Amino acid sequence: MLDRGGRVAGAQVVLDGRLGVLASAALARLSARGVLIVALLVFTIANAGSALAGSYVALLVWRGIAGAGAGLYSPNAATAAAALAPAERRGRAPALVLGGMSGGTVLGVPLGLLLADGQGWRSALWLVTGAGALACATLALRLPEVATGAVPAPRARLSGLTRPRTALVLGVTFTQTVASLGLYSYLELVLHRTAHVTDFTVYLWVWGLGGVCGSFLAGAVADRLGRPALLSGLLLAALALTLAVLPFSGAPPGLVALPLLLWGAVGWAFVVPQQHRLIAADAPGGAAVALNSSATYLGGSVGAALGGLALAGGLGARWLPLLAAIAAAAGLLLHCLSLLLPASARQEPSVTGPRKGTPDEDRRQSPQLRP
Image (cartoon, rainbow, N blue to C red):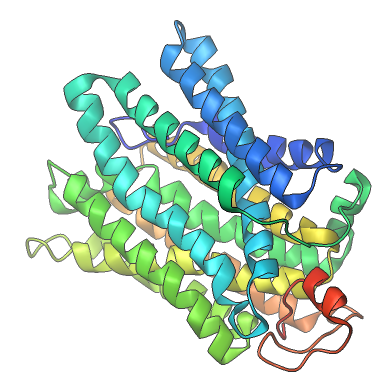
C-alpha cells in the first residue's frame, strides 16, 4: 500500500512474506482451491477492517493480516495456474498471475490516490475490499479443483534454504527487489529531484504499464527460450543499467518516462524466470514459489528501509537510483555465482519438451525448465 508520499507501508510488506509462509503451513490440509479462497477471504475481511480502523495501531494490525492473505494467495495462485495450464503454456500461466498483479498496480495505485484525494483514504480501501470480494466469489463459483501434489510440512517448506543453489537464487530475488521495489518506495521524491515533477501520477501509470507488458511478455519469452537463468541475467543487467541512467534523464521534459517504462518492465518480468528456476531446483510442493514470494516482499521492505537510512544520512534523493543500480549489479553477481553451483539432482525437460509418466503424474508435477 502506498501513502500520498509514495512510500511503502513497511509493516504490510514484511508480513506479506513472513505470515504468508506461516499461513500456508497452517492451511496445509486444505486443497489448493480451498487455500486460494481462504486467502482471498482473509485479504478481503482485513481490508474492510482497515477501512473501519479507528486508530493507527488497529490499521497496522489489519494491514498485517491483509498482507498475510496476499502473501498466501500469490504463490499458490502461480502454482495453481501452472498446474491447470497445458504443458506448452506452463511458462505463461504464472506470468498471467504476475500480469494481474502488475495490472492491479497500474490501475490501483493511481485510482487509489485519486479516491484518497477526493473522498478520503478509507474510500480507497473500500474499493480494494469490493474487488477482493468479487474475486473471492468468482473463485468459489468457477475455479475447479487443482491437482498440485502433496502439500509439504513446514520443515520441508524451508528445506530449500539448505540447498546452496536454491538459497543463492532466493538471494538474487531478494537483492533485485531491494533495488527495484525499494527504490519504487521513493518514486515521487526521486522524480521531483531528478526531473522536477510535481504531479507524478502519470509516471505511476508509465511504470505500471511497463510492468504489465514485462509480466505478460516474460512468460512467452520463457516458453520460447527455455533458459530462465539466461533470461534472469539479462533482466538483471537491464535493470542495473536502467537505474544507473535514471538520475541523468531529467533534463529534457518527459524523457524520464523512458527509463521508468523500462524499469517497470524488467522489474516485474524478473519474477517469472526466477519462479521457474526455483521450481527446477526441486523444492517440494510449490514451496519454492512461496519462498520466492517471501524474498520479494522482504527485499522490498529492506530496500525501502535502506533508502530511508540513506536519505536520513544526507544523501540526495536524486542519487538513490545509483544505489539501487549497485544493488541490482550485486544481484547479477550472485546470479553468476549460482550458475557455478551444481544443479539439483532431479532434472526434468523444459516445459515445451516431452514429459513421461501417467496423465495423473503429469498433472501433479509443476513445470520444469532448464536452469
